[in-house]
Amino acid sequence: MKFGMNLLLWTGELSDEMLPVLESLKKIGFDGVELPVFNTDLKYDEWGQRLNDLGLERTAVTVRGEEDNPISADAKVRAAGIDATKRVLDCCQAVGATHLVGPYHSALGVFSGQGPSADEWSWGVESMRAVSEHAAQTDVVLAVECLNRFETYLLNTHADSARFVKDVDHPNCRMMYDTFHANIEEKNIADAIRSCADVCAHVHISENDRSTPGQGNVNWSENFDTLHEVGYDGWMVVEAFGLALPELAAATKIWRRMYETEELLARNALAFMKAETAARWTA
Image (cartoon, helix red, strand yellow):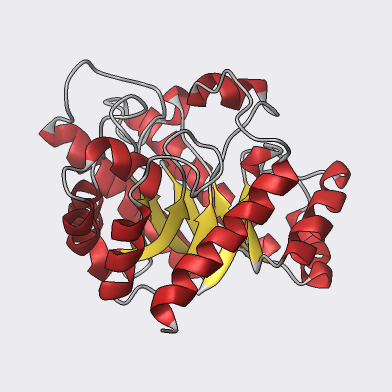
């Protein structure tokens, strides 16, 4: 198992101000970090070397918006979405990120007032297939993320994600499991994990209030028990949000501080993940 920390708790973009945080995460014991890749103009090759020097592996996260929505009825907008994610994949290759996670299958926060149409599903599959071809060229695994119904509408359950990935039908296109979204959308956690086990390449460990994992209402025993049952052995990445980024706080509806410090959240989350996995994977 590898343990990572999503940097969105601190920032939406790599900068020199993040170096003390990265050094701290390495000292705490994380294997790697999940990098936000929204600005594709950074010198990601230089950041790759910095992270190598720190001994931190990396995955990456990105999103799509209304202007580059891969399921838009406008072919030009869909093409923009494909191109945008391809640029992100180039950044992943430069920085040495092995997986790209996130809801880049459709626009975040954009709704039609109903579920996905057959055309939208087909456009999404077609767009992702083109992205997958580029992912193969950059040696990056796509880990498509479903979100709860309040954030998107194309993929809301992990069975949705599994079906989507199987329709894309490309070896570089996989999906990820997220404990926060599962806590909202899934009727049965164990069944949800089993439904996607054969195509799951990544896991987000996220509490029901987006704060410190293990200190909220997520059914952690069922999550870890079933991940062990299906033989998962990949990245477990903490995804927590705070008030550092006003635009992200607005998108994730975080209005109050729910932890003492970001470092303490990270430290407690890592200890929690290691304790839960040690009790199962090495028992």
